[in-house]
Length: 123
Image (cartoon, rainbow, N blue to C red; front, side, top):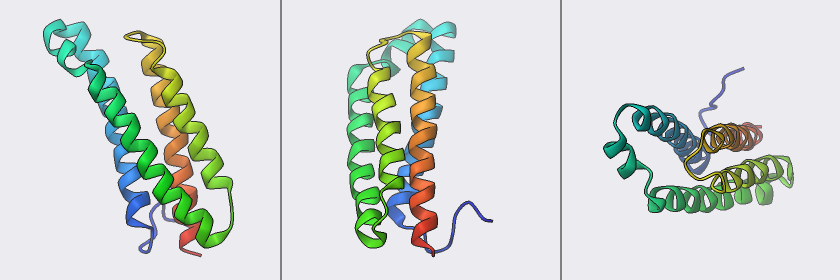
């Protein structure tokens, strides 16, 4: 079974891409902070985290909401919402290893929600 079906919603594809970008940002920031504190400080600005989370919430609401309305199933919405909640909660662990861990867990869960949404879109 292919992870991405040809008719998967562009919103779901964008949301998965954003989730991956968030995970890469989170890992890169953690590595860069250890190696280069000055550059890490730029990547740790609150606007990047808050803006990224708001964009994830917006794409989640549009993509997952449209899937729920189209197919009438709430599982992708529930899974995606859990992922967003974990990502939001990660922000309370400001600049710690736990922030990275929880963000990556949240990104994975959110991506799973979008994958479920995309797969139900193709059936």
